[in-house]
Length: 225
Image (spheres, helix red, strand yellow):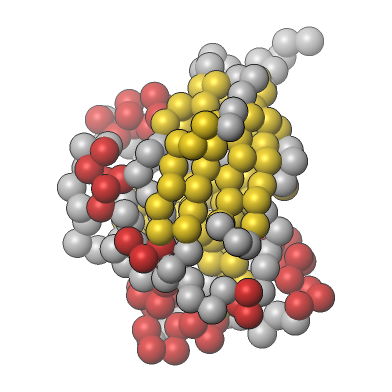
């Protein structure tokens, strides 16, 4: 298992981000989606990470992105076909992450039956905190997640409301793909998602554990000076 001194290197080792969609019933309903019977999974590239204090880039020609605050589970050792009852042994730590979403792009893709990669996987679309140890999180099923835009609370929810809990997510995912040290599972977002515009500021946190800050800027149109 990753030692405390090497926690911050975990994200650099990871090969992928496995994101879980619609893992809070209220969020599924607010977007008009059915509550899933099994986890809805999609992948994000590690190139989408953005460290605390960075600037989220809204790509041309969009003017806003949707914010989704999530608990990130950081894998601590190689996991394949992991039983649910031992799945927590594979957790190396936790982080707070945002799954930034170009909702307009996603809506068009969904209606056409196309993947969500362009809507979810662009550079700066996974802002993330530093990794903190399991010892700081005695009960990951009872954490309060929150997010503010320009100081106004937008999202607040508890991991106790997750439909699929962390051990199941690790077991289920590892039955399909090997999870490597440093890989991240984004466990879903509570209700309250909505747009954040260029020039606004996001503050988000896990109550009593961590707080992060991000600016929102405009990505320069490729090819323009």
